[in-house]
Image (cartoon, rainbow, N blue to C red; front, side):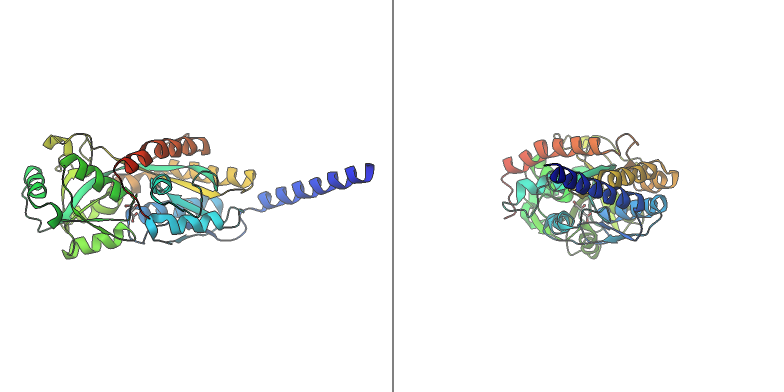
Length: 325
Ligand code: MLT
């Protein structure tokens, strides 16, 4: 009895020491931040802002890995399977909630297979089109969609993505059915929009404000109740009497389940410093995005935010009869 007791006590002590050593030594090499959408999109832009800021605070390089496809679920599964040592992170938004409702068999569970590190940003969306779209203003835009329906193509980043949700809300609010064209991210979708291969995209401002300002695409409405400070001349969709349509997209940072608590605490501390960085806040603000408060950049706030999105948006998609596979 005594020797077993001593043996199990020793093994516990050894595990705790190894655990402590991992945390004290963390990070001692480059890290990876997976962005599960294509390079050049709004999510990629936000991820690179935080990878740049957090690597300064952690003292190790953070490489952004765009593992895209299947509405972000391929990149997300990659992080769920990664070693829980703090060196592989996931930056993701609403699709972490909606994919669970969209896919019958996801290779991960959005809550059980991840440790929340903290929330990073929140931001609005804007309805944009190719720059020769035949409507002079928002009311002509609405009339054109109602008159042409599925002859009009709507780009998005896959079922349950932010751009898909926004497109769905727009189609529901206007009672129209457009021809949906899915992409691996709205970066490639924007390229086709500028080339005139696709007509409309509802995207986050971090992917669209620069192109609207340079006239490469046209913005018809902010996808909500309020105009965007960065695009003051663009009306809110509610200005055209369109109700029931107000979307805001929030990104959060996750680590694989089982990542040691002291390591998670260091990651959260680096995220909280980053959301407080003046340079981070200015860069995001120029794109119409807000960094969250340091209090919101916490595991508890991200856990609560994800639960709310799973409970609300997942239901909305199921009610709309949307399924991915
Ligand atoms: C989306 O949900 O539409 C994605 O965030 C687009 C992207 O980041 O490429």
